[in-house]
Length: 388
Image 1: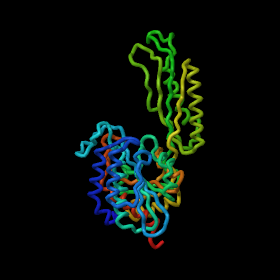
Image 2: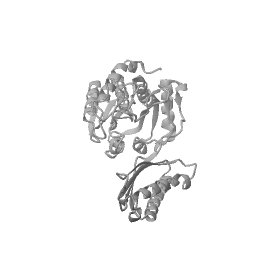
Image 3: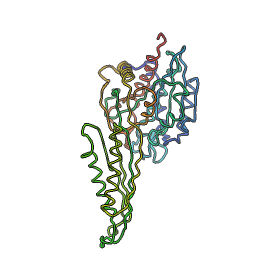
Image 4: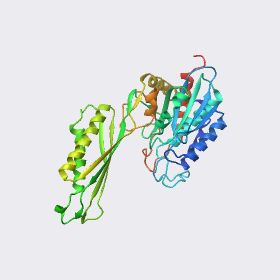
């Protein structure tokens, strides 16, 4: 692949950085070891400014180019997942119960590689803001960084990010203009009935039957309440109730996710779920409380910035290895918050055959790190050329 030659020279370094990060997976906003390692490397590279403690353990590094110009933002997520690792690699997680099962260790290493190159060469105008973000998997670290004012504080005019993609050919880029990933909401339903002996159900108000009825009725939101041409997913993912075979329990709990692109569809799903929960509770003689949490918004790529990012990706990987209109998916991404306030684009970078994301056997493919770092570096050089 025609990666930047100087970045290709960093391949072993990036592998070492990534594998070190893989051994110290940390969660949500609490990334002290991860942040300290990244900050130490950035100082070694000679970044001009390093602003730490944003969204608790996030940071923004500034590299000045040659001459006046705008500021372009590049983002990498740093957090891991609460999943016990089963890869068997010799650099496996040293934090029991946590692992980098989504490749954020690789994303961080790629942006670090770009940082080293850009600090060394400075073949661009203006500035680049390198955004190292916590809590993508949890509470929306991107939202917190935006709310803490990073776009205004550092004058960021556009912003870009990458995510590895298992199953997509190694070094292959995929994106699409407009809607790329869905908004994600979470629902919790707490049912209060009246328990009793399993042999005497007439003396109870059975929350188990109510949970079954609600679960089946919730599926009609997709099958009967929305237009078939509008994307909508409603999935019940947990039902918890009962303890033994001869006792009807007092309570039941239902949990699940709603994925949408259209805010009107989102509102409809929320309204119907409230109606279904109330109606089913009444029909089964139980009490039920719905807690509906609105989560990450849909990820929308700016059409012009995505077209530009596609050109850069083709330069790095070749025309045949870039899919510019790959369609949208129902996964979610908190980079959406950054794209709500600044134009930019989010792309997937294929890592070949591997275990899927969030799987205990997943591991980032180090071979694609120079590809991602080259993409980031060339974005800056082409967006803010010295002769521009």
